[in-house]
Image: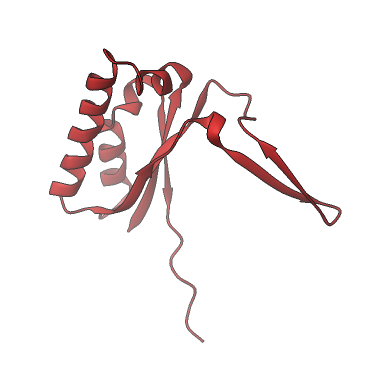
Length: 120
């Protein structure tokens, strides 16, 4: 089964990415984690994301497109990246999610990936 691990981080972790002192440990933890996922042979795809302020939101209301620069979520944690893994079951996905760096300071949401639609 494929699962998406959705990694969220508080703003201070986004700030660490660019910090000359804290950036090394931050990126080192992620590099180690993603290397373990790769080595286990379960990685399907994934990416880290730029900070929330780089985002753009598009909405269509009453037929009119509205474009707004981000961020807009009124939350303490923002989407920092994702990985799609292929494992036997939800328990295995939970184990990998718990090993991620963001599980210790943010959160990881796990969602099953929808299978492709049936061929007609």
